[in-house]
Image (cartoon, rainbow, N blue to C red):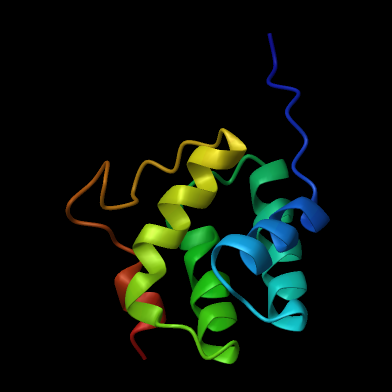
Length: 99
């Protein structure tokens, strides 16, 4: 049976604004990227964390909180991201956002 979960960009953006204190514009952009990736079943951190890092940076939030924000967002939405450090201590996405 196929998973029929549909992630909405507006829900992700609202969560980022409320819980990660992201600015509305960056939260909307990140929400679209995250929802599109998760709806395409790209449930891995490298598909979403660069957009979340950009969102946090553009909002003046601490990018050092990225892993925590991503973990809480995924858990709230019921998504399992197998390479968030809570599940994998050696994620491969770090090189994508470090420079």
